Image (tube, rainbow, N blue to C red; front, side):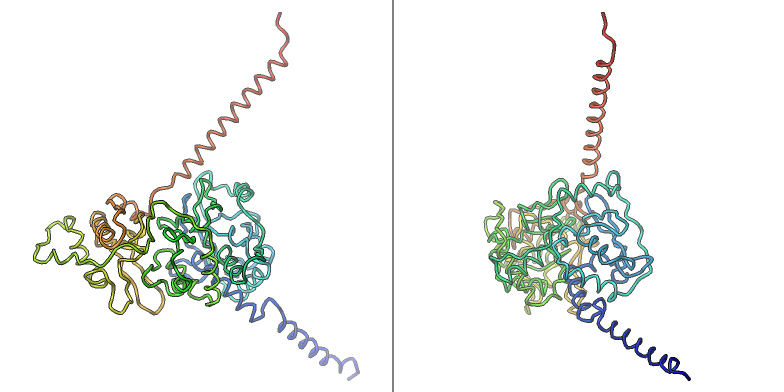
Length: 466
């Protein structure tokens, strides 16, 4: 064996050692980076939209309802055939922060890239590492989104982005504390609170001048969470806010339901106490936005009331639609919330008075809770059943009016027609019809301008008459 032959095993071993060393220090697969990316993905609640009921995590397929139709969430697993496995880090960043896919087409802002635009380069790198190396690939391609005309043309999003997308990542305010800046970064960015809690204009862009003053999440009301004492959370302590985000309820104030319950269930409860504290500090500092209809704090309405005492010995009407609010309450609510609406003895089920669910003049959320209930996916087993299949629209309206009259804000009035609308998913959107009407007007104006231009040109070029 010559010298060069004897060196071959040594060179091979050296190559393996170099390769192993490179893999051990590869930033894309660093354990700490992947853990950080998973935490950030949880803060962003990516799983909520990108996982269909009964489906695998991040495999997409969920139909996200919007005023312009259902948007089908995409597969964001590292599958190279069905997901984002072929995305470069720059393409991933462009999708997350600019709303532009790898193929150059624009995403719809149901994906909250307008908020994720605030995310720093370092956090985007951690997210990219997690989705490429910490998520299991799923070889399932969801059906494409098919929106009605004119929203089926994605190119118009480029114009929308030019008007409403702020592309600058978050910049800390040196005049504020570290906790305030951390809270601002999370609220404005990954946790994308403004996506639901900020009202929108006719073009479905957030009204930045009314940050967190209340918005819509489908048929649900995403309430005012500014520092106003009556309309918002000005009267809440930081501990109240942390408990609400961590546990889904703040004693004597509110409990999460609908999309907010999902946010707690999938995301907020897993954030560190320091991050939740930072969010609370920031929210307490958001400029107050007051609704004149709120004459006292929303969670201060009502008192214990036993309406069933007057019903004892009274025969129930044969027609259940004729049952009184007290009779409906006795049949469907009193077992858990007790005769006077004081809640369960151990505090596990909330009182119905001093509760934001019954204290708002807009009682849509109360109606939706009665219809849909509240269910948690954790091991607590605590839930409220929905009564959509048991109670008619008229019964729900009667019960809701009883609850607001005695335990909440008596100025809230609920009709059977309102219940019917909410049961069907909320009021229909006229955005599609408005967009088509606007396009028709623009087309007509263009046609008129063209006709006038042609006539004027003909007059200039025609020979003089004499």
